[in-house]
Image (cartoon, rainbow, N blue to C red; front, side, top):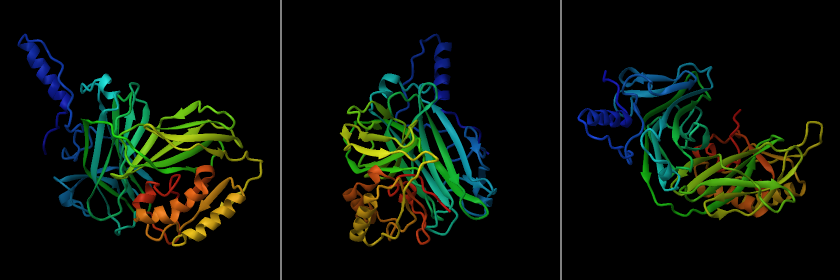
Length: 400
């Protein structure tokens, strides 16, 4: 078994110590632009370290004797675990960017890009997506508090699939936390697998982005609201601006945004406005770089003793015109919550169908921009990557 691999920082410290022993001044080494920042990224050390298991029964498996799959590269791989009673397995590795000589004045210019990737696999029937595995990158400030996150799509194939996510490093970032997560959904084991995770930082030029889908709302809480929207790029910072209804100035903002990368032209952003009052009207808009959405309104959920209205509709696939008519009826009744049990589209992997069968009718009615809408998995609708990322959904997917 090979010995532990040194991080880039270890090499810098060794070079500095050698220089000092020879009586020469120790120059601060340059940051490792374009170089791998993760140690033991393919688990070829045969152990987790320096990864740490946060929850679940995560395992490092030896591919040649592992019954479900070979490693993508080398001999070892990350596995969700044999204990199917544990709902989720998560392991993480933190990288201190300041210790690697990435300077604050450079990190805060919005001209540093992060490229995250990994090979993912789930031992399921292709397209099943029951055990959901993905990789997430959390941005951390100087106090190691999260300021946002970036994540890949999940997979649902019994073959290794590379998933990637890229974006601008937000101002104030001083460290990052990379998470490997496999969510158990079905069967005896947590069958998510990960290999060859990679994180690289590069100097980039900020490019403009367009808000390609107006915001949608989700959640059933009376003191919070989830806001999601989509853009064509991710080389800018994102936020939600909000205020009480009647106030002409947006005097609050949420910058803690999670971005899921669908592909190089589709980026889905999610933020939660919390600390709200029940049965209260608010105004909000989303911001991506210099782009601003229109302003929309929402009303938080009712207090426990108050009456409320719920709208329930389903099977709108292949009928966008009829769906538009249904939405007009729904809006006329001013629901507090809309529930959609499926099927929203006929072919869940088709971004075109999500546009024509779901988003176009919603945009014409401004339905999801003003009323919270919760989607659940329909009897004929297995979860697919884009719905898991909520390119079709205003909130997290709810499974039976």
